[in-house]
Image 1 (cartoon, rainbow, N blue to C red):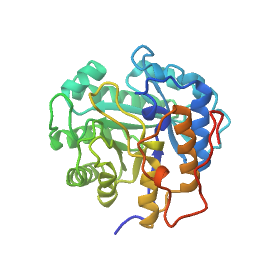
Image 2 (cartoon, helix red, strand yellow; image 1 turned 90 degrees about the vertical axis):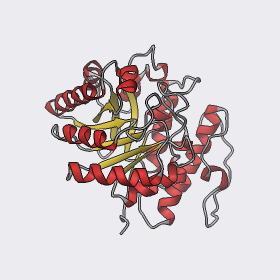
Image 3 (cartoon, one colour; image 1 turned 60 degrees about the horizontal axis):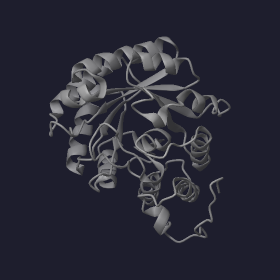
Image 4 (cartoon, one colour; image 1 turned 120 degrees about the horizontal axis):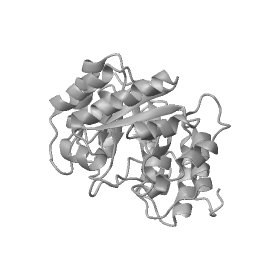
Length: 313
């Protein structure tokens, strides 16, 4: 049985932009977020609280969140944090959910956060508890859950053990991230199933990259295995600046097309999402990896390629 609904988290304003050479001005990030809210997004990664010298695209996290202060109550903005310092910065803003991160391999955790894999779990637990004590929602992502760019294969038993330890802090959800885009559907199905069983009733979210063109197939496998939520980025933009060759996220419009045609509601409007992708392509001055915003929906609608300007649709 497939679910009637699938929740999507729009990550273009954070994971989508963090690996870009072109620095997106604050007002353009806010415009991107508002485009996606207009298209139906209810949960969005909007910033990460990290060192500006390491991730220059995220240097304006506080300004972006300040520019979103008038959002409706049902919109959940997510701020990614890697350590307690970042969490304290985030808690000084109006961000509505804290996203902690730990990493499934020692080599990647050392390069990304200067600690071992299990030390990164302990830090994430502290962040979750701090956020909850301050009255904020908090969730956590296990990065490189399907493979490490430095060590190769990651033991699924280790990922399950991490998830079980994280569950003790009662995050709102635990996400499994294919940070470098190496997963295949069977791998996704197996790991999602094992983690779901281990942490029930905490829901599982899945964050996928399309580095090796398996992203959409992996998303389907995740849904079949019971993942409650999927991450995606408008246009398929994104990547990890700390992982070699970790290219873009699965594209929101491509994922919507698959889910909509399969009878699964997301709350997004595909036409408006395609229009937003066309706008984003203009802002970035290049074509984007997504397929559906180029080919269009099916059955064919009145949607035609929109003449875009740098000021928007």
